[in-house]
Length: 133
Image (cartoon, rainbow, N blue to C red; front, side, top):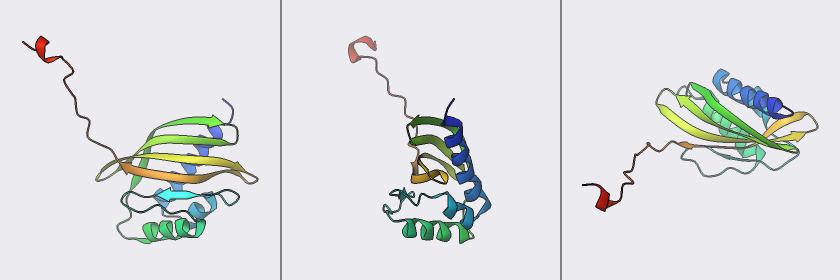
């Protein structure tokens, strides 16, 4: 399967650090040789490693830090970059997330995380009006 398993493993480590509240592990997972960005739900975009690490410190140190589980990850890899799209299961609902990883000298590192609320699935009747009766 190539690098897909490595990227999925890095993604698993990301959620394990999040779930454990392990800021040191979280910091070690973020890219140092490439640009980074992070968009937490409801936050402005963060685009420096220092901002991102501090944001995770704030989240993981909080007594209200969410319990989180990654579900249904799908992976795609192109050269030294790969991404995972997944559902983040929280006690209060679900988010959809994209995690982008880049291969650095120390292994696969996350360079971009974006999580956002999932829109409720709305079924739209696509039957043309003249066929409804």
